Length: 238
Image (cartoon, rainbow, N blue to C red):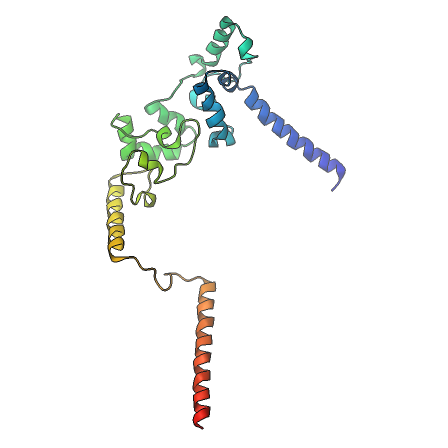
């Protein structure tokens, strides 16, 4: 490969990495939180930095609002007055700072990026129970607030449900009356299989082309062996 091409590619990669690191380093929320008490630091170092949001460059202000672009120098060297000023600028309601989104606001915040999923969930039995303060889980109860994850169903569901049988066969984002009926059917079927002792079928319902060819070849071999045995018996009698 041409040396100039290699140099250009190296430069592009270096600029990309520098840009990504610079963005994180100049984010006022990240800069400040890294200097705060342990519980305030962990939401960045132990959670957000390992989350799906970090992987997709979704920073604090996308969910909490505020102004993450203000220039903050060494926080530990700021006077209390200077720190209070920078904090007010970063957490300005005029810049949309909302702090911790709760209730319907959480659906509004998450819906900015996950509109389809939020619409499904907020109209489900659990979503309605959350809005009505009747014990329904919020988005962060299942996905976590800062260490954002794809929930492990049914393991995640065990935080609220003692019996999670069949949960992995339904849509947990859209639990409605039909889902409850389907879950009952699934549980009855699983219970029947447990009592009878589920035996795997000799052949799967649908055979692939390789499986069909393998079975056909095996059948030919068996027929050949049978024909050979018959031939030997006839020869001995002759």
